[in-house]
Amino acid sequence: MPEVEIAIGGRSFEVACQAGEEHYLRAAAKMLDDEATVLATQVGRIPETRMLLMAGLMLADKTAGVQDKLREAEDRLAEKEAELAQLRNAPPPEVKRIEVPVVPEAVTETLAEIAARTEALAETLDGARAG
Image 1: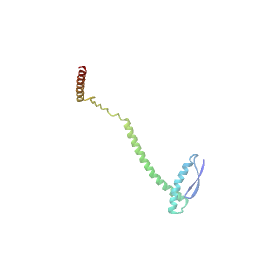
Image 2: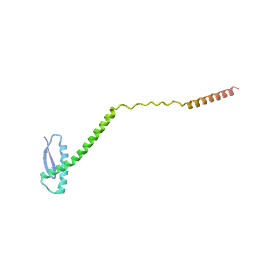
Image 3: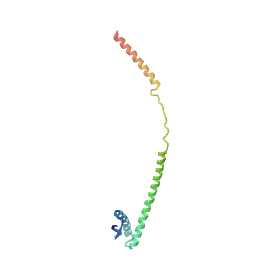
Image 4: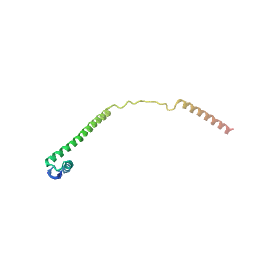
């Protein structure tokens, strides 16, 4: 079991931890040291046990707020996951069929009239060329 030397409030401590967890121990010690530094700045020199207790309580208070926010976020996430599951399990919306005539009747009539005029012009031109 590795032993890690950490510093909290200007004091050094030897602490054992599981292999591979040294980084986490150092990170936790840094957070505790930050709180101890605030205490030392505000109060001055205090006994080691009291400094560790107060720093731990201050850190616990901060993490309680973070935990509350985490719980709220987890609750919102659970609500959204339930909403998503409901949407995924819902039947697909009913398909509405809308029929639109391909070519409106007025256009058909106009095209027929234009075709008739074109044919009449073509016959007139053919007659003029022949004669």
